[in-house]
Length: 342
Image (cartoon, rainbow, N blue to C red):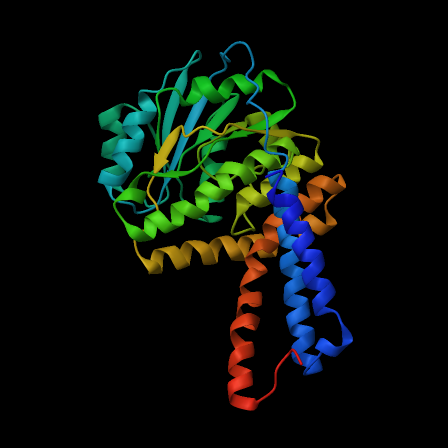
């Protein structure tokens, strides 16, 4: 990194010095679009290097595990029992210094899920009004539980036995609102789509997440996460008006002075998308949520470093328009004869 960063800076300066010479301008409109795309990607690259350069140092562990009671919330919605059962079974086997209550939060009103809960002797919750999607389901569960800590696992994310011992201890700090761990796709080595998706996840939950944590700007990612109930109550629960409620929640918590902790160890294994339709649906949902949070991040009352980190994450999904520009310019040249560069 010490070698690559100055090389990136040097080549960027050289390239833009070449690009911005007046005699490079071909069609002014096409040149302007090209320059806009290049500046946007330069800003994204600078943000990446800024984040990556902070991803150093070991994880600081509090000396003793927490003894607080924990509610483990597993939201489900019409998923097959064979997908949910491994998560429920593993959740009941987690080691903890305090009492653990596992809860199946069923938004699909499935009698099979009720039977699964009875088989593993865990709590079963369903609600009459299915509003607010996953966030509404979790808020309903939080209203019917009372432990100081609440863990959320997506129904296909199977926790390790040590999940609670490695995460709950960080709540010894009274200002910690949540502890996030990576999302790992166990099917990445059996399915090419899941493998490609995991490659993206590995980059984010590797150097990027560690850098954000060092900048005190790591945000919640929706699963494999432990919340402090008091922090959730302080911001009115999980937002139900956002597609990516976890991202919006993180901004609200930050504004109230709460902090987050990132534990960069795989402590739960999930299932990644196995076909392009599922992958595109996942990415589209994340993009909609993050882009809709840009205004919230801009208006947030956060220190500039945290605000900029949230903006970098939410604006990542705008990168696609620059690819459209790059791919369109040769077509315009072939079809119409116009080009960006003289």
